Length: 252
Image 1 (cartoon, helix red, strand yellow):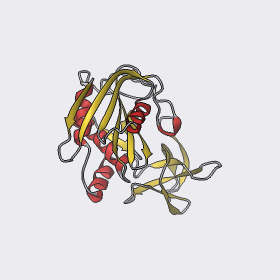
Image 2 (cartoon, rainbow, N blue to C red; image 1 turned 90 degrees about the horizontal axis):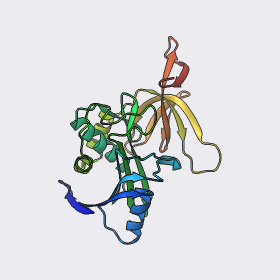
Image 3 (cartoon, rainbow, N blue to C red; image 1 turned 180 degrees about the horizontal axis):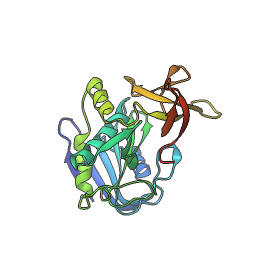
Image 4 (cartoon, helix red, strand yellow; image 1 turned 135 degrees about the vertical axis):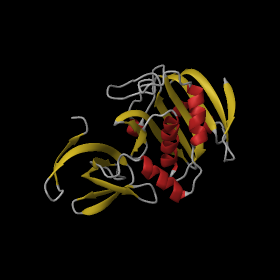
């Protein structure tokens, strides 16, 4: 089944293809791209057998979630735009969504949505996973769990596409910082590197996001710039000077 949904404020019209069950919306969207699909093509599935998240992780995808992949023009701040779009849609429902860098969507530190971006030349294949009714992993939450049981999946997706911000970098970064629950926190960063070998690990205070969307982490007496990696929020104890004495994963 296919339908079209125009996006106000941009030249894109989203052509949405619905499937009951697929191996992965990301893989199917790549097939559409290889066959010449245009920007704005969207693949949506009721279930995924081999849904995937960042760094090759499995994304559990039972009935009761939004699983979609969208073809969009690749650009530097696209991960932030998508995070803002999903968080703003949840805010519309009255759910206090926040963003863990770069674009995990949390509600009171519990994950409700995630975004995966894979770039092929100048096209970004953007995977969006939102827990609507289902809570596929312990410790997560869902739109239903937050008190909104009657949310229509297709309407929610339309809201996300409509909320995709077209702002310039300055306004976009300002909005992202408003939604961030990472800036100001003690974090553990496992930074993804281009070279073989173990990834660099930093523990420090996230002190900002730069103009390219990179996380700034103050650790070991200086500010480090992190372009990609896994971010874990920590709780911590400090001495009288504010130095970190002990840090452990939030919720431990």
